[in-house]
Image (cartoon, rainbow, N blue to C red; front, side):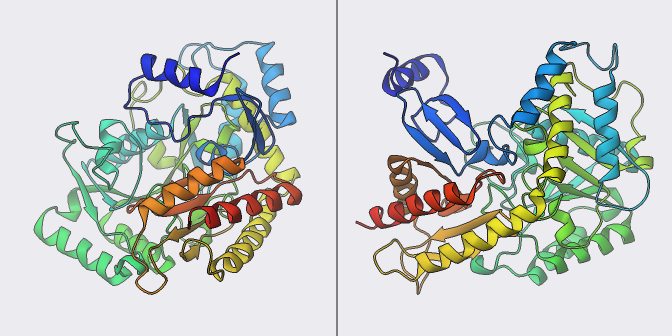
Length: 428
């Protein structure tokens, strides 16, 4: 019999340690908001493949769309023989772009690839080279996106010099003692000391930081950035890789602020588990690169495009934007109740828009000092309870909740009960 232990031994022998694995259980099958491992153990999935499964594992409409496409063709390379699903998806994305005016879209395969190409498009449009990002940000693991990412270990450690022309300013987080005023002052100092704003192509920001700890970007920060970008001819890029497609109670996270970006990067839940990403932007900006300057052999796979078109239908038909808000309210209520108990690990800073919810594990409720060790105990206890749970944050003490938006109330309640027991177990 194949066991988790035997698969783990094979994994250690065959796969380099550079790709970390949070849990030593191996998926055998999955449906909706549940999955089963190689030994038949059942789990409720509060990780969602890191926010990839807003429509759940193997949504019937997504699977049906992919099967239909599979019977037609699987690959031609859009640059060689184009196909309608790519065009149809770009048309749909242009319709829902979170800014006024004509839009155009281009498709890729991964979130990092989308961010890389957003930078290329911004540079082509502006004729400038520099890009400003934020501490705590996560934009990918390629060299350029690692440079943009605001965390050294493990994303930059041992990888040598990062690409030039990337600058960071502090991201405002109340519990870290950083205000919006601090961030804007740092940006002002950056413009005075290190980089001329006339040579800045773009400022990139996550509407809600993902790996950095699920911290929403304050609206007044986004408004100030929009004004600064307009003043200096800088493009504003919203990295919507994790926040996109109904997760935050809006189609895109930036819409919670009312601020309009120039470009957005998308991936993760775009295609319901199939590898697909893209850049959506103002048409005149998107047309800046020369023909052949953008693309990729597998970029915009026909199978993934078919899946994405079905995902957009499911979000609309099943009212997943409204569902995200309802789930978020329900989770926050339960988490607030948990936090009042004295027999669980101390919790703090319950937060997040829509169903992009997180909270911190701290050593005590007074000092609120981060407790990474206790956080690890929580995720391990959750797995033992049959709950897939993810941590994140610059201090590794944030628990993030990313269940599919299609989860039933019954499964949500069961999962939250498992989380409650894990919080108790981690305090022993």
